[in-house]
Image 1 (tube, helix red, strand yellow):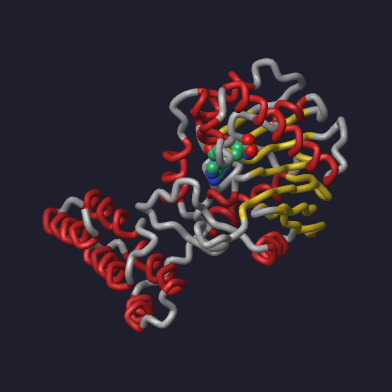
Image 2: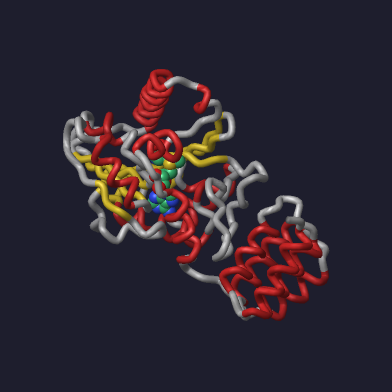
Length: 314
Ligand SMILES: C[S@@+](CC[C@H](N)C(=O)[O-])C[C@H]1O[C@@H](n2cnc3c(N)ncnc32)[C@H](O)[C@@H]1O
C-alpha cells in the first residue's frame, strides 16, 4: 500500500469508528522515515478528529524537529493542550510487547544480545561470541568501578542475566530488573548454574517499585536506555535508580549515541507506535545533562565507536 492509501484507509476507519484501525494506518504512514510534511499533517488532523490530542501534540513536537519552519505545525501545536507528562505508560506497554521472546534461543540471541552479523554464525560461534563479549564488558566495568565482594548490585534491563551470571561470583548479591516477564522466566534457565545469590524481578519500564530504597552499592544498565522512546520514562527510571542506591553508590551505564535512527534524547513516543529497538539516542552532553539534572555526580562520560558510557555516583 502507498502512503496515500494508508491515509484514505485511516479516514475511512474514522468514519467507521474503528479507532484501533485508524491508529494502525497512521502508524504505517509515520513509520516511513521519508514521511512528508503533508503526510504528517494529515496524520495530526486524523488524530485531532478522533480526539487523540496527546498523540497529536507529541507528533507536532517531533515533526517540528524535522520540519522546523512549518507554520502549519506551529499553528496546530499552539492549539493543542499541553501533554508534558511524568510517565508515558502507553509507550512502556509498547516496549513490553516488543521485548517478549518466544523461545530461549530468541531471548538470548534475538533480544538480549544481537550484534551485527550474528545470524551468520554457527551455534558454537554464537556462544563463543556471547562469552567473549560478556567477559570484556565485565572487565571494562570492573576497571571503571571498584567492585567489592560485600557489594549488593542491581542490573536494570538485565535480559536473561548475561552479566549477572559472572558478577554473582564476585559480589555478595546481584539482582536484576527487566520489563519483560517472559525474559525473566528464561533468566531462571540461564542462571540455573550461576554461583552466588540474587533475585530477578519485573519492573514497569519506568520504575523499580519492587526494590527497596538505598539498598545497592552499584547499579548498572547495559544497552537499556537507548531502547526507551520516552524522556519521561527514562527520567523516572533513572530517578528510581538513584533512589535504590546507597549514598555514594555507583551507577554505570552504556547507551547508543544519537545517530539519527533513534529518537533524540528528549524523544517522547506516540502511544500507538512500537519503535522496537529504536528508543532515544544520546550525545555526551545529553547524557551528562540528564544525569546531573537528576542529582548524580558524573565521574566520566566517554565514547567508543557508537557507544556512550557514563559512570556517576549518588
Ligand atoms: C538489548 S537487551 C540488553 C540485556 C542485558 N542488559 C545485556 O546486555 O545482556 C535490553 C533489555 O532491556 C529490557 N528492557 C527494555 N526496556 C526496559 C525498561 N523500560 N525497563 C526495564 N527493562 C527494559 C528488555 O526486556 C531487554 O531484556
